[in-house]
Every structure is written in C-alpha cells, then in structure tokens.
Image 1 (cartoon, rainbow over the protein chains, first blue to last red):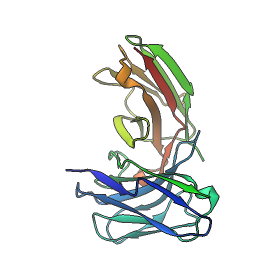
Image 2 (spheres, one colour; image 1 turned 180 degrees about the horizontal axis):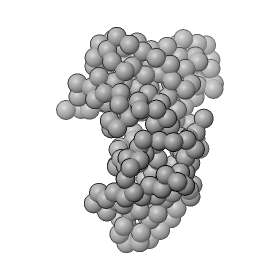
Image 3 (cartoon, rainbow over the protein chains, first blue to last red; image 1 turned 30 degrees about the horizontal axis):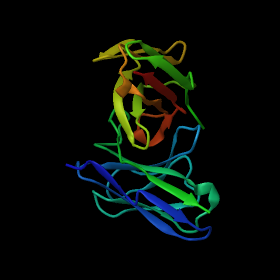
Image 4 (cartoon, rainbow over the protein chains, first blue to last red; image 1 turned 60 degrees about the horizontal axis):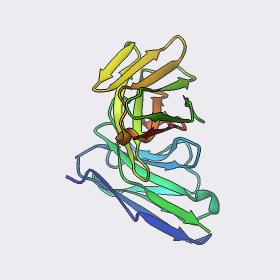
Length: 114
Length: 112
C-alpha cells in the first residue's frame, strides 16, 4: 500500500517548456488535489477533482491544466513553464471531498523553471 | 489568500519541553486541522477539531479551538527530537475540502 505517489521527484525546465506531473493513489479515494508550496507560504490549491470525471479550479489555476485519467490517477500539466511556477508541487487525495475528510499527501515534486 | 496564520514562525526548544503553536483564522469554519511536514516530505494529518469542540487530545498532542477569537493552539508535550518539523493549520472555507486554506506554518526545532 504505497498511498499517494508522485513522479518525478525533481525537475528542471527552461522557460516555455512543457511537462506533466503524475500522481497516483491506491486508497480508492474519490477526491484528488494539486497544491503548490512556495517559501514562507502555506499550500495553495491549484486544481481538484471531487470525483472521477470531474475537475475544477482552485485558488491559483492560471498556467496549469489537469486530467483525472481514472479513479487512481490525477495529472498536472504545465503547457508553457514560467519562472513564477518554480515551486514544490504536492498531490493529495481524500475519501470524499467533505471537509472533515483527511487529506493524504504525496512526497512532492520540486520544480525549478529557469 | 491565506486563511490561517501560525505564530510563531519558528520555535526552538530543548527535548522534554512543551511546544505551543498558535493559529489564527479569518472566517467562520466548521473544523480546523493541523498537519505536520518533515523536511522534504509531504504533509501528514495530525488532528481535526470541529467548531463545536473546545479541546481535543491525541497522544502527546493537545489542540484547543476558540471560535470567538478565531484561534487555535497546538500543544506538543514532552517534545522529542523527532518532533522537529513544520506544523500547519488548515481551515476549509466551505464544507468541502475543495477550499482548504493552509497557513504558512511554524517551524519547530527540538534540540536533543
């Protein structure tokens, strides 16, 4: 039981390049989330998927797209990376989207955009 | 926008001492959660306290919630070096996890 896994762990991009961050969970959770964490700030929600087949914008969605491929997998795509997207990205999942449900986090992807 | 703000930003104590971290938030909530993050790792859920609860315990953790002051505190008793981590409070703005707001965290260092 791996929980929430993310790939890659580290990535360096040049401005304008694209990439996809992968996330998978094996806990049969319905809801999945993508956050970014910047120094001195808390996590900010980029996109979420309340259930398979649905995705919605969070607090900071600009410059990102997501795909809920199936119940297990939720990917985050940067179409044209910018230095402002340098951050640590965390994927999380929860049984439902209810606010009393615990969120389980992956180990993170550290992204640097030059 | 940040909903929760932790205080202090950093705290350094000796092993065996108690550590207290505070969180203030801005809007009404139905629950407040505390998470822990070890360096270079993802967040781990510690405890949830509902708006109708004033205090909750879990092992060496004690959480209080004062909805009139819009504040919460996390107390770690008899701290250990392994408690060294960042601690975040998180509050959902709605009844969904889709709008969870995290504070900037308190960095706790426990010296052996």
